[in-house]
Amino acid sequence: MKTKLIRIGNSRGVRIPKPLLEQSGLEGEVRLRVVEGGILVEAEKSSRAGWAAAAAEAHERGDDRLLEQPLPTQFDDTQWEWE
Image (tube, rainbow, N blue to C red; front, side, top):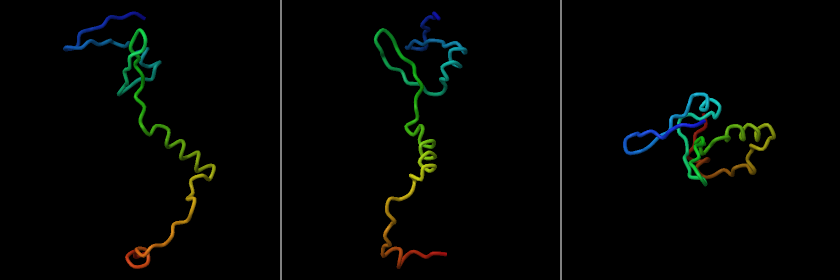
């Protein structure tokens, strides 16, 4: 698909047709980076993307337990009140 750069203030932009946006799944923030011969527009991934799925998988395998039981401290004996 061919398009033109358009003026947006002191910058330039590209209008991306709706069908291309739907196919790409791009929405919200995107990342731009220079590649040989062009500019790549890609989805901005959350720094914690996939953590929920990984935690669920770990739970299913039983890998989400503490490796060692915590040792009681003086705080537990003198300052903490269990109700």
